Image 1 (cartoon, rainbow, N blue to C red):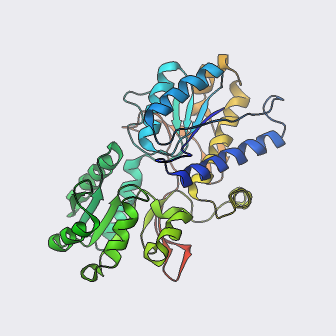
Image 2: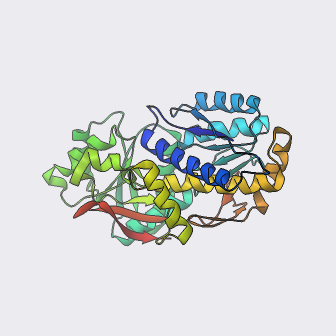
Image 3: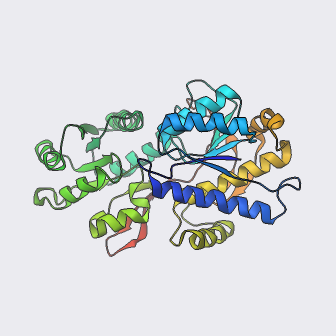
Amino acid sequence: MGALVPLTRPGWVGAGQHLLAGLEQGVREVNDAGGIAGRSVELVVRDTAADPRRAVDAVDELAALGVAAVVGEYHSVVARAAAARADAVGLPFLCSSAVLDALTEQPTEWVARLSPPQSRGWQVYADFLLGAGHSRIAVATQPSVYWASGTRILRDYLAPRGGTVLELDMSVLTPTTLCDELVENGATALLLLAGHPEPAVPIVKSVRHDQRLGEILIGAPAGQPELAEWAALLGGDGAAIPFLRYLPERLSPLGTRVGTALRERLGAAPSFVAFEGYDTIAVLAEALRSHGTDRVDRARIAESWPRVAVEGTRGQIRFSRIPGISVWQWARTPIQVVDRDPADPDRFRTLHAD
């Protein structure tokens, strides 16, 4: 199996490390159980560094090496480039973590995805905001297909429900001038639609220490506060910032066992990204067992997506076609809105669940 993972900057290295840990744990368990058709699984890892061009080159290289399929990737824009190339060369791609709705321009049989589409997750987040009494929302954003898509989803969903979205461009504003804009426009919530650690961390510090903004909610639907690096950089300032997390409220016995193994592998609590990695291998291993493990079996592997039924760490995984989504999609990925507890930033509080 080929694996696409962001392991160097400007990629989000922490997310890449958790994704890789989940993939490796899944492979280890498959091999400990005898492999697939008597053969051990090898994971051939390529670092995308959040660069779409590197991802395309990696797909071409992995296809030439003869991998049966490609898995992984965290960054949506990178996964989109990888998915398009996998579709073009006829290589099955099981996307672990990227959420951009339009993962490919046209419907494809070659690509399936475990993470929920952005529209579903961010609409759940919008419901949380409305339920918490927030209708005047500011978004601190950067130029990106992913951030633009998120802003559009929020605006389209909130507008019919009495909400407004004010877009604040962080390529123009500084954290200090952002605070001035928030005060002037009377926003009650600020969402971080911007990269981590820059400029998200300086924005949080600036807003937290501006006495005029003591009552404003800071939110991060893209999940920046999930990883330990967030708490290390921000301490108490990083708590009480709600974000999307793709875990059930309670893990199954399988999820609990895998979580323990992932904690040992990572030396820290596993994020939902690590569970996504593990589930990716569980799904693809089942497809390989049923439909072949070699280059010549690629079409049969891709054809198996709608017939897969696997018990993952976060529930039973099945793929289907969803209107507006061009790839095979796990339709019922669990979604929570959680934050870090101000009294204990290492503990997460569930605020809303879908």
